[in-house]
Length: 285
Image 1 (cartoon, rainbow, N blue to C red):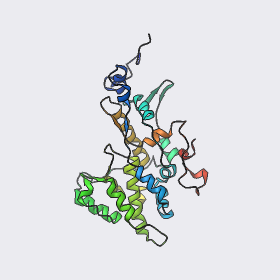
Image 2: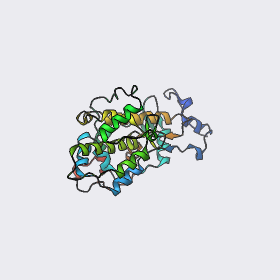
Image 3: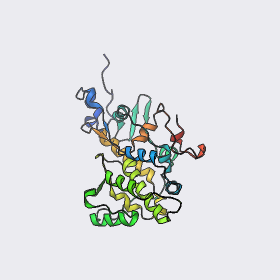
Image 4: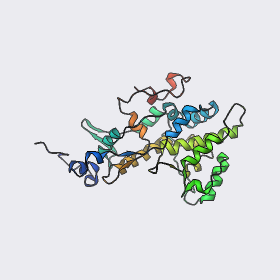
């Protein structure tokens, strides 16, 4: 009878803590093995479906390198597929161990598939540790004209319903809006995208307010390697989820789902953009 699990363990570091080991040992049943995929962007994509962003806001997404994520849109995630990938993820080498060999997700995928910046300056979040709640409230107000009250926070994380409610009840951007108003609204949408899609935490309803620290200078924001940071955060999430006592996986899970060849084509976000200018993940069928 062919034995379960790997024949040679020498290259499988941390295998005693890996979730695949417990599956091979029969300590995790099939019903318990499926991971919970945590993402906070359902409300975002529903909102964008019902409320078309003004061209002036989209221009800022284009300028800062995030428009490709909007163009690709909502990618349904299937926890069984994500779980299977996590079970093949090796934390030490950041690779998937497949039957055909080792493979991984390179930074080029973030650039080619979603158009994000991967070779820019680092994201440092200066003074994040020294900023108290009032300093963060003031910063958010100066950047967006929104002053979130204390009950909008848990620690330094903002409850997503508070953000969504403000965006949906604030003034809509139009041709007569000032440039300052456009920038303020763009920052709110960008924060929603960062906290809900690219850097979701395990809570399911909170966004880290640290992101606002980097939004003051939009010109500098456009040169920062947000694509590399997104991939790094996903790597960290996969490493954590591959350990046997973890049941939640988060991060930019849409990237994992999109690299699967049989993922069905999704509806376009903007039919007016020329096909050759769309990110590769939009075209992949």
